[in-house]
Length: 298
Image (cartoon, rainbow, N blue to C red; front, side):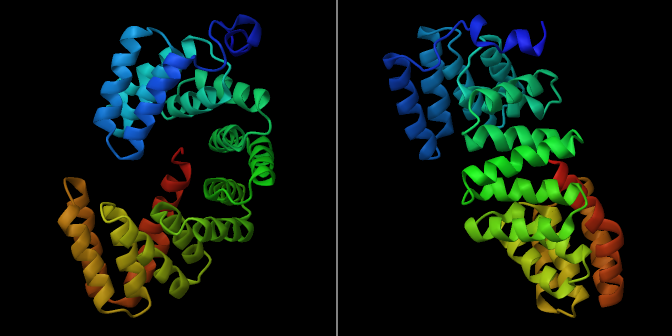
């Protein structure tokens, strides 16, 4: 079955909104999720699904909850089942489509495209479709979707971040930096965006500016070993003394497996001084980290 056949309103098997009973279950589950109780959210939705088998709304949000618990394989099957029910609710299509895109599932493009077509005024649908297209190398169409999302909601931090990523991947680095600066201004708690911004600024040769941004990103993401090491290198590159070794130690405390080798490598660069740290940031760890992070799907 083609994407067009899968996601058409004519073939809809479910209403485009949950009924009252399902909505009540979703409301309770969302309250638990808002409180960080994803185990409780999962249990609530599983019970609801037992009473309403195959309901795409329950399947989608159960997938979200299970993904939060680290059950990625099970969550993937929930999202697939949601889309197999052929919903036309754009929130479901966008959420489930984006989720299966992380697994390179070919059905993702059809779901995301359908969401954008069914709800052209919904920022979520436009930016998720645009983000997908950008990472598939369809730059012109992806940027068009992301700019449309920005026009719909210029205060949505994720929209500004994804537009920045798209511009960076399209080679428009100055515009990319401007957009991601807007993103971190709108959501100062987004450590991931800080790290990407710091790497873009460092690539532009503004290492002192980058050092501050990378340090902030690393402090916002204490579990992110690579972020700590990037901040350590940047701090050492600008002549810092305390911050580089603090960041190195933060990385060491979290490192496991191959990360331990990377910690040792960065430590040796710090010991060799500012010039070697700057070179390793700009020529080794920095470019690889930037590419990987920009290609990470939302």
